Amino acid sequence: MSRPAAALVLMLRFLWQVLVSGMTTARIVLRSGPRPQAGLIRVGFAPMSEGGAALLGCLVTLTPGTTVIDIDMARREMLLHVLDLSASTAAVVSIREDFERHVLRLFGFPRRQT
Image 1 (cartoon, rainbow, N blue to C red):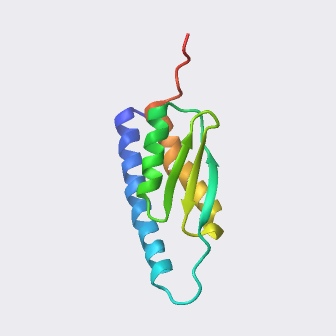
Image 2 (cartoon, rainbow, N blue to C red):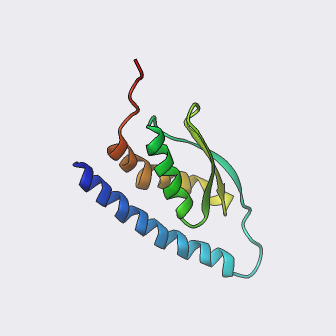
């Protein structure tokens, strides 16, 4: 897949996730009764450049219900705040399928310093 095509796919997936996550977040906030437990989770990510990790972090943060607190390039982990811990597995799957693989197509793997 060409870089422009990968960028378009990533943009469309991002817009879709913003819509779906926005509705889910609104439902959580507006419903009566007990609120789900929010919390922090660590999410590993594939080897990528710092620019790719930054873009991935931005995409995740701009998606309602999740916020990137820290990106650790040495461990290849992001620390996320999630609105609903019970849905954290689904959030990780979505990050990998909807964002990470497309970011990798755009940014590739980091080059080794010689």
